[in-house]
Image (cartoon, rainbow, N blue to C red; front, side):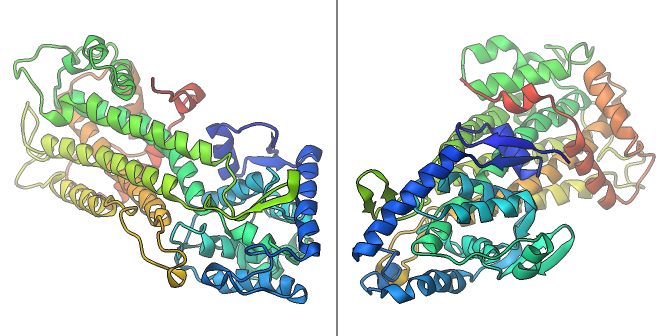
Length: 505
């Protein structure tokens, strides 16, 4: 597969990060970046040779920062750092997130403030080029002093240690490098610290969530549109004039999308005998739209972080200054990810409420959308299942960043817990996809029962879905159908302009 080459000389778009996550893009290392990195390394090494004391270069780490390390032990210091910090546990993170961890680390190092060898940058880029994906556990980071544990697992592989996936194979780091004809590297002064002291675990999750949430946002509006017509909902709440007088960008976007999806539907009219719809229908623009606005902000935070240098200490080539500070602290990401997972949770919460409304036997629909209510249960327990997912998401949406635990003998006495927010946000998103699939199952059943016409755009999507899942003629096992429906929604093509043009004014 030919991959797009991304230049390091400009900021990348979210679409670029998406391509990197999917393995459809590569990083084009260039001479300008090489010159920056080499000059920065030389500035650091000049100070090492003078015997200057610098944190993490010739001292211990954390609360051991006052321990001076002799010159003959500087390489061992860095290797020991990586090995001792690789303490992750739990499920492995996805291939997409590992690729983004590699890419964000390479981009940060190439800015020329981390004082690594150019060969170290090349070694990381070789992993990305050959799709050698270190096995990175999802638990173990506190989100301050960098994502130490997960980035240590990432770094072990370029040292020929740890484990990596190459295709379907799980190999030792040495085996993975050997399979592709690569050699392990030996870390010099500061390099181990530069590789693990940063926010790339949290950032990779945030970028992946930003990519996926744009798709989810769009398809949540598609799914809601089917439920609106199935429930005989009014078009009045989606009138553009309503949203002009409360000018939140996400709200207006959702209303416009629903109007587009239901264009030419004879059932989508402003005045109905029931006067008003329940909030879960009437307030779709306000609720979905607020989540859109949140994710516009979260995406902005992630894109800014993707252009940042977050290891410590920072080395400035001009003057050779080495400054110990706190750019590794994940608080900007932790707060954004907590905000984002709450917004994700709300897409699922209001979706489940619409499923419940479709079960109530109102507006000409049979109870639980069953063909023979009583003899059949229809989607009664589908709503239970959706409710259980919503409840789980509510627990996971509790903010992680309000917690902090003193670490490293009091030296690192405030941490962000942003890594926990990141992992939980991905879990929440995955469950929201499932809830939306359940709503689509309910909404399309409601359309079948009611006979209401949804207009050409939505009707075309329903017809496409029926090629995956035939219309129900009675009770049947729904577990597989939930999974198939989730896959259907995630497979729907979204035009680039819909995917990328998410700028909410």
